[in-house]
Every structure is written in C-alpha cells, then in structure tokens.
Amino acid sequence: MKIGFIGAGNMGSAIFGGLIKSGRVQKEDIYITRRNKEALAAQAEQYGVNALESGKAAAEKCDVVFLAVKPAMLKDVISEIRSAVKSHSPLLVSMAAGISTEDIEDMADVKGVRVIRIMPNVNALVGMSVTAYCAGANAAAEDVERVKDMLCAIGSAVPVEEKLFAVFTAIAGCSPAYVYMFINALAEGALKAGMSKKAALEIAAGAVMGSAKNVLESGTHPEMLCDAVCSPGGTTIEGVCTLKNEGFEAAVINAVTASIIKDAQLKK
Ligand SMILES: NC(=O)c1ccc[n+]([C@@H]2O[C@H](COP(=O)([O-])OP(=O)(O)OC[C@H]3O[C@@H](n4cnc5c(N)ncnc54)[C@H](OP(=O)(O)O)[C@@H]3O)[C@@H](O)[C@H]2O)c1
Image 1: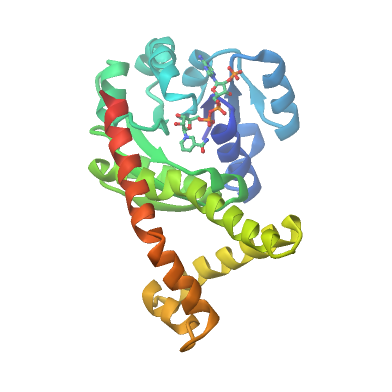
Image 2: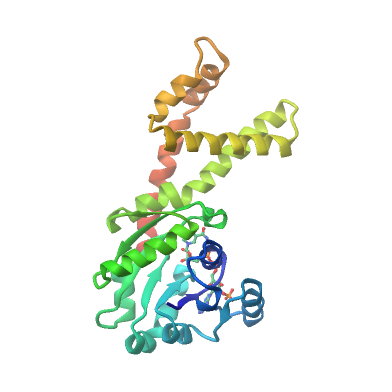
C-alpha cells in the first residue's frame, strides 16, 4: 500500500515519521510532496522516502493520501488533484481544523470520494498524540480501520462523532498549549523562589506527565486523586485553595468554551 502526503510540514512529517518509526509502513511506500522543492528533496533524503513533484502525482500513485496542508490551502490542493481522485480513487485523509468530511466531499466534487477526517495534536512529534477520527459518507469500514492503525503510530486513536470534533479539538488539539502554559507557570513559581528555570521546567514537566499517567492508569477520579495529595492543614491544600480562589478552574473551562466558539466562527 502506497501512502502519500500532500504537505510535509509539522503534522505531515510527524505522521510519516511516526509511521516509519513504528515499522507499520516501509519508507519505500511513502511519497511526499510540498511546494518548496529544495526542502522537499532534503526531507525525502532525511527520511528515506520518495519525493513527488505534485499533489496530483501523489493522488495518482498512492492508495491513501494525507492532506497535510493548512486549511486555507485545502481548496486549491483538492482542485489540483480532482482529476486524479476521479481516475484513481485514493482514500483522502484530512486533518484540517474546522473542515468537515462533507466540505471535503463538496470540494472534491467526485462521486463516491472516500474521506476520513482526523484531528491529531502536536504531541504526535513524540508519538503521544490523542487523535480523533471519523468517516465521510463513502468511506468503508476497512478504510477506517486502515487509518486508525496508522494513527496508532503517532499515539492513540479515538473515534469521535463529527459534530463533536470542535469539542475534541479544544481539549486535545488546543490543550497542549494550555498545559505548556501551566508547566511554565509552575517553573516560574520555582524560579521566583530561587530554583534555576531549566531544572524547574524539567521537574514541572515530569510531575505533569506523571499526574496524567496516574489519571489514565488508576481509573480514579481526578478530584479523588487531588484529595489524596492534600494532607489536613498541609502545604498542598494551601496551593489548591489559592488556585480555586484565583479562578483556575473557571479560567480553564472558559478557555475550552472560547476555543469551541472560535472554531464555529472560523467555519462561517
Ligand atoms: N501543527 C499542529 O499541531 C496541528 C494539529 C492538528 C491539526 N493540524 C492540521 O494539520 C495541517 C497541517 O498543519 P501543519 O502545522 O503541518 O502546517 P505546516 O507546518 O505549515 O505545513 C504545511 C505544509 O503544506 C505544504 N503546502 C502548502 N501548500 C501546498 C500545496 N499547494 N501543495 C503541496 N504542499 C503544500 C507546505 O509546503 P511548503 O512549505 O513547501 O509550501 C508545508 O509542507 C493543517 O490542516 C492543520 O489544521 C495541525
């Protein structure tokens, strides 16, 4: 099976890099293309994959084509590959924020076009993306399974109803930025108290990673885990009360809501 990537930026390269690393796909079966031909040649050499001169060539050659360009470029790219999609029927995989499978089917304007929509996050770079997927009207069950298996190369894959993609995007696509802010703020607190920022960042990131693992592996509600850390009259409950008084939880909920509202505005 040949896998094509139209766009080889942050997300495209994270996905094909992950596929190679996981051994799910051989380098020889990966075909990439982008506008900057110098960068294309360098990337093809770096990863040992094939470079193609155009998106149309990718759609002609490959069984699965990842559309890994910015959402604003998608219409042009789909228009460029339309004739190849008509003649070769590749499975199209879109990761464009805010663009539905129906939008892609309309843009392609090819009867029976098979589309899968995914939403990875930046942690794909370290093989820890939580990626949502859903199928368009014409995608078969085996198309879904094939893409799901590929997504496991960059982390975990979760089926999400398309109407909830904006919600998923807020808590999985945008949230790494919120968590980076939290880690930085923890480190700044330590810096203020005399620890080096470098050491504090490493410690804070490790504590956040361990806490996330604990939530996932213990199956215990986060509020119970929080209670378990707070000794009566101790240091942790002082900090927890301060966060509550400063509106920490409301701020996070409002941030998620703001991301969902923005997603709807971008679609208009
Ligand atoms: N980055 C994330 O964390 C993230 C998370 C979730 C979803 N996504 C989605 O992933 C998609 C890609 O985002 P990204 O962050 O990877 O963007 P990016 O780093 O800017 O990469 C975009 C790629 O598209 C290529 N490109 C642009 N126009 C093209 C064309 N007409 N034909 C062929 N290639 C073209 C660019 O190549 P040149 O530079 O050579 O033009 C570049 O390799 C977007 O839809 C985004 O919504 C990204």
